[in-house]
Image (cartoon, rainbow, N blue to C red):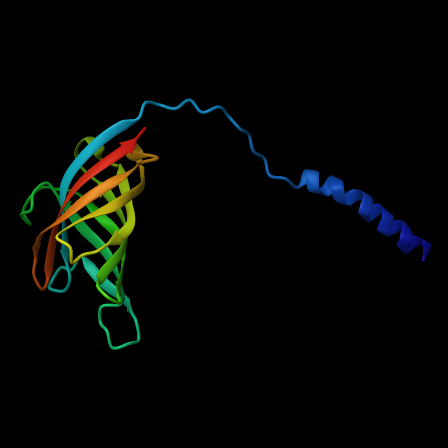
Length: 178
């Protein structure tokens, strides 16, 4: 019994020391902020559902009668102009979650990666609610990489054209970054 009591006391005395030694390493360093920059981007998103070369593919659908409740994976080109033959400057990859209770709304998570020009290798990330039935709408820029590291801002969208298979959306994006 004495050995158990002694062992219990030793364990109790070691607990505070164990907490100190188990902490992760961190170091706080002073932040010297760079000057904020504002960049305005203008490009066109080309989405295609169906056909020979789809850029949006449904991967899940709710088990109800409505066909508009689904999740779509995107890999769509971004171009300088609205024409499908216009110069490709990047692509948008991510998810769109279609939610349809009273109106058609899409919650989007898209990474707009640029592959040409001044912003080659950089991207902006949009994560926002997109009320697609409105001709003009605003989405939030919540981050980025490369030139747009720590980005925030907004994207003004305007549906340029829409038919049963293709969607072309004009993007005017204001990005605040360091």
